[in-house]
Structure formats: structure tokens, C-alpha cells
Length: 186
Image (cartoon, rainbow, N blue to C red; front, top):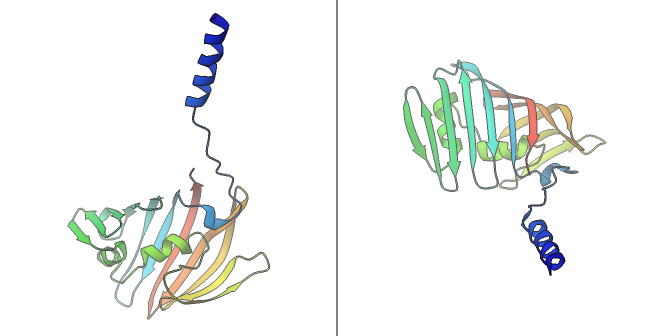
């Protein structure tokens, strides 16, 4: 009887343990949750600036912490479907999308929803696009939403190659996203 109880207890404990989720991705589109950090630089005809960032993304929520001389000292941009919040030392704002709020940081419309894809080296599925790829299949150039993007550096992250630097230009507005640390999450 004691042997049966021990076996039952062992089976119960094994069933309760969570199996680890693999982060051994083989394609960028498999990465739906991540943490990345780096530097964002931007220039408009009238202004420019840069900041370091720490971006945490899940399939339905995102958060970017900015610090540095964006004119705000630091800022926090958070979003859920249909609602985004921006908090800085100068105030708080709400909008339907994070891109609308990025205007307060840079002075131009920064397509944060598209950046969720571009930062993984993917075309955003929300708009038509023209792209060129290298022999390995990595994006080299992308024209989407009126932005002309150049992906000129990639870095290996596990078994996936992800962008390290993205340069973008639209109507005289420019930004460069330099991703220093990429961490896909389970």
C-alpha cells in the first residue's frame, strides 16, 4: 500500500511541474515575447535627440522605458489593445495607439506597432510594403508606411539572426534604432 501511495505521489508531483517553454527559436516570427534594449536617435528638420530604451513586449502588451536627453529626462510608454499611456516629468497623456503618443517624445509619428515587427526584421502585416532581402533571407531595405528603412547590421540571438541597427527616413524625419541586447522570452 505504501508503495502505491509513493508512486501516486511521484506521478502527482510530476504532473504539477511546469514544463519549460523553449526559447530556441529558428525564425524571427516565432518570437512573440521579448525584452530588448539599446539606443534610439532621431532627427527632424527642427529638432533631434537620443535616448536609451528598454522594451518589453508580449503579444498583447508593450512597455518602453526611455532615459536620456529626449527633452523629458525619462519617459514610460505602455500600451494594451486600444489604449496607450505616456508618462514623463512634463505630464501624462493617453491615446488609442503608442504611435500617437510617440509624437510627444520625438515630434513625429513613430510607428511603434510596426516597430514591433521591424525590430525583429519582419515586414509589418498591417500595410503594403516593398522589401529587398540578402541571400540569408534577412531584410536589407523596406519601404512601408512611407518610411524607407535600411537594416545594415544583424546579430545572432540563439539560432535566429535579428537586426542590430535599423535606419529609417520619412519626409525629412529620421530615426536610428540600435539594439544592443536582444532577449527572446518563453
